[in-house]
Image (tube, rainbow, N blue to C red; front, side):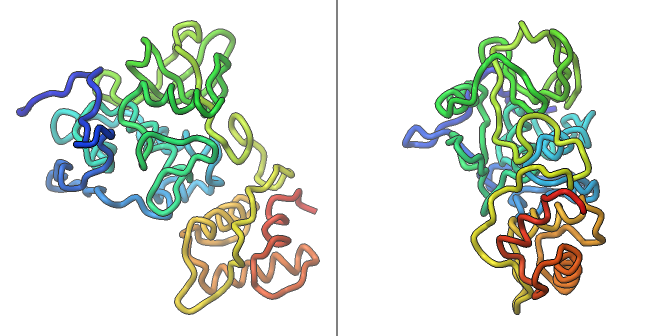
Length: 294
């Protein structure tokens, strides 16, 4: 391996005005032959592997799944170079980037930016420097000493971070990027952690569990009617509704595009729920998707 290695605890580079460097596609290391380069692909839909598991977005389960499906990932194209650092566009220590990657691809995304309601993040993609995680969650009043699945944790006075996978007694099981240059799951003592940041999960704190139709509070209606249009309507709100319908057992593709299939499922669902059948996902149809099955 060649080139200069960025120290694990070094802060990210700064722009001329002192802001932390976010994604810069021009700086990203190209993917080696045979590997897909994900630079610039913060799309409005999650990775296919997460969508295939039919997980509702913005839940602890969806966010954890992003890293669970990548356990064992290392640095395949040089020092601090892999899918996560290419996505960010910065070859540097990547534990904080891994947390950001999981949140964005687990559904906390809007228009290519990280979207954590109530939490103002240091960059538009989240964090590349661990101390910023502590600062941002603390300012939001979402940082304390009580871990829950899906929480962000830090250790060693903000020198390393990851996600809480499970909580048991006085220990946590974690998902961590850039630990021995790999994405790993290990056990840590709660007492060894600096603290825990609580993302605003749609299913509350912890894994959602259940079957997706058990009466959990729905995410807020997006404020626009989802329906079949020309050109086809597409955005994260469509993906959110599709994912919930898939969790309920409806045969629907989860891709963020409201096409003929979504229109058909919407109409069938409205009829099943005793709603007016028009193929439009308004406030009532949206809320019904999160009500218990009849």
